[in-house]
Image (cartoon, rainbow, N blue to C red; front, side, top):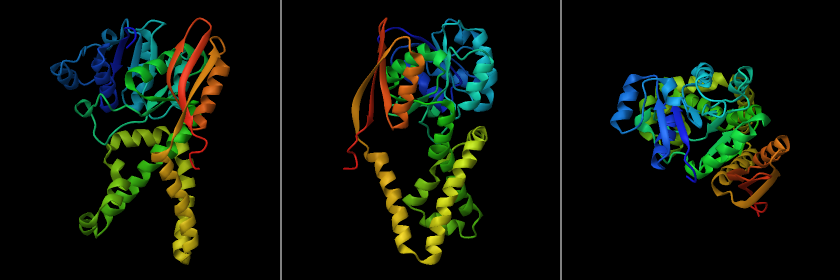
Length: 336
């Protein structure tokens, strides 16, 4: 890190614990708190700086990561805000953003709270599953208000430098629609696939022949059930909207199978194959974007456009007059 930063992590499950371990790995001054006394005790046994009191953990910090379950965020945000200074940056790691952004606005915290969501995880849960390298190369969505442009710049630099993450600026509403299709509906599909096997009289025979397609298709069904339920219900409208789109495609595929229409199946699966190939084979061009230091709305609009085009940020630096972001956008000729 280029300068000392005092950090607190509130909630130390898989994501919060991984944030904590990464910060410790770079020798940041970091404190932690978890509502579970057993987790606090385990953290201390591992040499981590856990406190028994939330206020003690977050007081005098430069930034606080809120990493508890989605339903607890509003109350935790309000409590942390009352015991931290006005210059303390607050951010969360929850999988939905519109609700928490609205709650922060209602609490008058929009100038220092930046809703966040690292797109990284595993089926495992808890501090013992945490990994300091979990976020390396991962997308990390940030959804600030223009009033929080300073905290957003700070977090963009921190996430790029310390976590090696790809920062993706979005509006909260866009984020929730995007993750509904990229993350939340896949949990429904995985649950549907694994659930159908669970209810099938052929359950044991299916599992005996299950190979990579079943393992990959059902992988996120192993996520702790409460976490999945919180995520789906926290983004219910967008999930149902995107599920209808996926269901329409499934109906088309079923109709093609029913009709013996090989041409339609080939067309559909060729398009799907291209998307899958783009996921793993996309190439990027380096970009540098400069903005006047006091034009927050134009700055955020340009950065959101970059993200909508598939780009991301890797760092941020500024002087008195200019803010400069480093980043990448997909190569124009990547399909060529």
